[in-house]
Length: 91
Image (cartoon, rainbow, N blue to C red; front, side, top):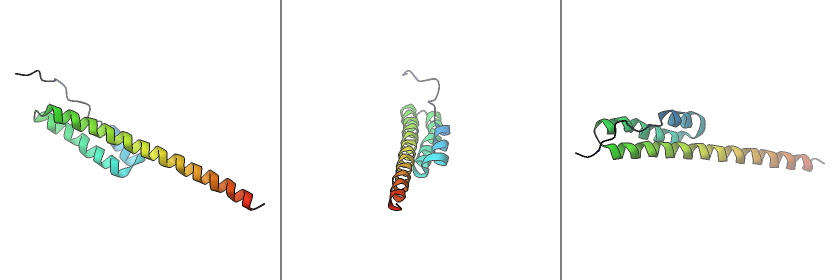
């Protein structure tokens, strides 16, 4: 009998929900689906798949947050560039 882990991995559901609500809806939904599979896979005894699902949920949440952050930075830069550029055009 092989050495079985005693506790399931963190399913990262909180991060997946926050990513869905605050950051990037498509990646957040994928993260929620992956995180909801963790406990089911663990209960079935598929420990490697449960760990992979947990890792995938975390990865998609991070990607969603990064995309949202990049989008916000680009939005602010565009507003500043066009706002300042528009002010110079009026002179």
